[in-house]
Amino acid sequence: MGRKNSWKIAVLEILQTSEQPLSAYEILGKLRDKNPKIAPPTIYRTLSDLVERGRAHRLESLNAYIACKTDKHDESAVITICDDCGVVSEHIDTGVLDALSTVIANSGFAPSRHVIELQGVCENCGHEQSLNQT
Image (cartoon, rainbow, N blue to C red; front, side):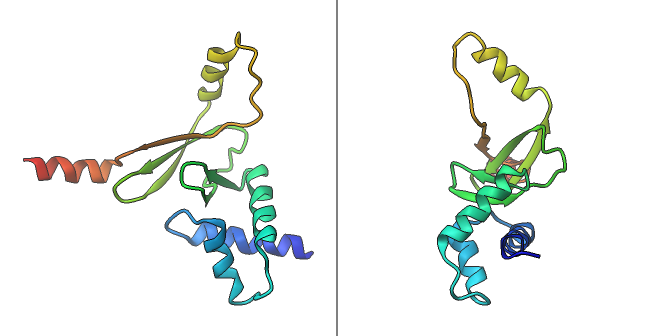
């Protein structure tokens, strides 16, 4: 197995075992214990490749990464981020891209990639807030 593949495996394992999204530098910090010479460009290239292959998602609003939780890499992922507890969830919807394509069809705009993130309050935090209001 090549060095490039070993970095992919290591970074993906870190993302898969993390409870929270991680920045590239947080991932770098976790890898530096065993690989003190690893440099930020290696992490960024690895993350870029994982995102391109549908194995990870880059959270634009948080400048962080999470592991992809589904095998449906050709479908559109909708990411929800709770403002209270920080929980990030991945939802798959086959019609989201079709709907967006319809909206921009006549505009002449040609998207090269898409990121769909929604920020708000998750069900658990929303339930707690409603209990605290009564």
